[in-house]
Image (cartoon, rainbow, N blue to C red):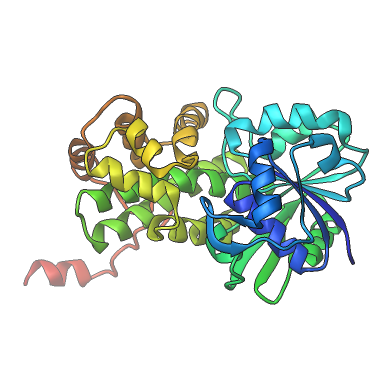
Length: 350
């Protein structure tokens, strides 16, 4: 089914999704906040600063007029940085028709309110139907049609299946799920763990440290997410461990790149400036600690990342504090089995 899409946000991910949707046969309008940026894309059909070497199809309309990007569209894809989602949603509201589907493709948790991106859309644009698209999906690879798999979350199966059919292609496989909260928490919190993984890389630590951060970071995400109402299966899937692996391991990851720079001695501000893209993990880190306090959940890695980011803590001290914490059982849900009678006595005589 051919649909009319408005993609709100012309960063690398918004542009990559525009290319995907256009190649799937849909009519696509890409909105940029800056007219100069919109004009550059319209005239050159390239976006070298964000997606070098990628050609943007002529069929994609590009505008800085928000009303024009929204009017008459069947589906809107909201892809601005998470810190601008509420402001952008408020500006969108007058143009959005009843029951228009808005797919949140930004990943983050709003500091202060602790709202997810779909929470914000439902608050600011109540006439719309909110959904979420997330998963291990670097824009640089999606724009080049490299195989990628994501998950669409929606409150109704009908909406999820409709979006699945629209986004799915030979190179972009889409699963569906009703667990919108779990999908969004995984997508937001993995960015904080990726900062930690990058810091470890910048300090010259090896694969052992990376594996530890990924697995124990996933334990933190799952512990908080399940306490908030997300599903265990979601955190074991593409938008949990899948997204965490790719964000911690890839140089496409702006969060990992910023972390590497901080591990090499740069401040948070210096690292963000050098990466020259929005580092979402910085904005989600404080919100994650607020959620930890609200739900009484221990997040030691995320806590140390916050101290490095906002309190000037030396990364080496943060690592030492993580390694020397009180001894723990890896998983408290696995019980110890009582030794068979006689076995303990036999061992005692060895």
